[in-house]
Amino acid sequence: MKILVTGGTGYIGSHTVVELQQAGYEVIIADNLINSEASVVDAIGRITGIIPVFEEVDLADPGQADSVFQKHTDIKAVIHFAALKAVGDSVERPLEYYRNNIFSLINLLSSMSRHGVKHIVFSSSCTVYGQPDTLPVKESTARKDAESPYGNTKKIAEDILEDEVRAGSLRCIALRYFNPIGAHPTAMIGELPLGVPDNLVPYITQTAIGKRERLMIFGNDYETKDGTPVRDYIHVVDLAQAHVVALKRMLEDKQISPWEIFNLGTGNGFSVLEVINSFEKVSDMKLNYAFTDRRQGDIEKVWADTEYANQELGWKAERDLDEMMRSAWDWELALNDRNKKN
Ligand code: NAD
Ligand code: UD1
Image (cartoon, rainbow, N blue to C red; front, side, top):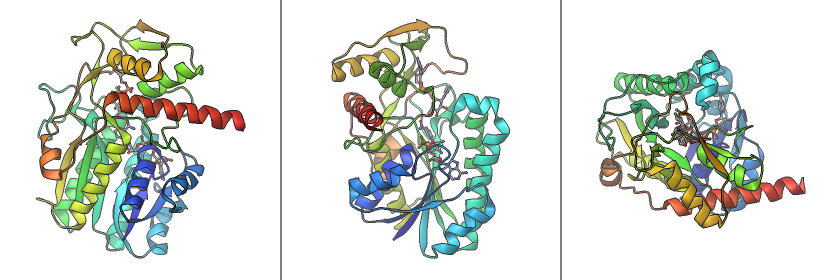
C-alpha cells in the first residue's frame, strides 16, 4: 500500500518513514529539502534495506504538488509533515510561514480531492493549547490564541482540515505532538538543526560536543519543581510509531468520527534541569550551563493527558527520558564523526 509522506526527509518524517517501511508500507517522500538533506533517503535505505521513492517538490506550488499524484496514481493515504517550524523565525517572517504552511496544505488537499485520496494524518502541535488553565492537557482542552505565526498556522490548518472533512469524504487524524526529542537507535537519522538550535536538546548536545560554549537556561523563577519550565518530552521513535497506528486506524475504517485529534506525549512533565541531569547521567559528562532571563513567549508548564491516545488509539509511549537523551547524544557523536570525515 502506497503512502505519501510529505516532509519525509525531515526529523520526524524520516523516523516515520522507517517505521512505515518496517510495517510493510511502500513510501513516497515529497520534500523540497528546505530544512533537510537528500542523504536522509539513503540513510533510511541503510536502516530498512529499502530506499524510499523521493520526489523533490515544493508543495506550496500547486503544479509541483499535483505532479506527485499524477506520477503515483495509487497513493492510498498522506502523512503531512512538510512545514516550516521555527517559532522565532515565524515572528520575523510571518508571510513566509503562512505562505508555506497554509498553501502546502491547501494544494495537498486539492490534489488529494482531484485524485480520490481520502486519508490524511496531520502534524499538529501542543502549541495550540498555549498555557492551559488545567493540567494535564486533554484533547478537549480549549485551544488558546497562538503565541506565534507558526503556532497560528497549526490552528488554521486544523480548522481547514476539519472543515474539509465536514464538507466531503475526507478522513483525518490530527496528532498534537508535545516535545519530540532523541534520534533513531542506529544513530543514522536524527534532528539536523540549521545554524544555532532554538530547541533545548540539540542545544545541550551541541554544547557537550563543543560546538556551543554554554547552554543558557531561560528562567529559574517559574512555579515548577525547581523553577525551570516543564515539558512533556517524547522520543521521536515513539512518535513515529504513533503515526503508523493512526494510519492503520484510518485505513481499517476504525475511526469514531472522520475528524479525530490525539495528543502524543508521555504524560510526564520534566523540567529543564531534569533533562540536563539525565543528559549528564547517560553521557557521563558535566554540561556547561548558566541561568538567564525568561524567553519571551515561553510557557511555564505543559504535559499531556495520554489516556485517550492510550485507550482509543491503542498506542503508548514506551521510551523514558534517559533513552531519549542517550539516543540524542549518540546522534550528535555520529554527526561529529561524519563531519570529521568530510
Ligand atoms: P523538519 O523541518 O525536520 O521537517 C519538515 C520537512 O518539511 C523538511 O524536510 C522540509 O524540507 C520540508 N518542507 C517544508 N516546507 C516544504 C514545502 N513547501 N514543500 C516540501 N517540503 C517542505 O521538522 P520536523 O521537526 O520533522 O517537523 C515535522 C512536522 O511536525 C512539522 O509540521 C512541524 O510543524 C510539526 N511539529 C514539530 C515539532 C517538533 O518539535 N519538531 C513539534 C510539533 C509539531
Ligand atoms: C518550542 C516552541 C513550540 C514548538 C517546539 C518544537 C516556543 C515558545 N515554543 O517549544 O511551539 O512546537 O519548540 O519546535 O518557542 N530552553 C532553554 N535554553 C535553550 C533552549 C530551550 O532553557 O537554549 C528551555 C525553554 O525555555 C523551554 C525548554 O527548554 O522551557 C524547551 O524548549 P524548546 O526545546 O525550545 O521547546 P518549547 O519551548 O517547549
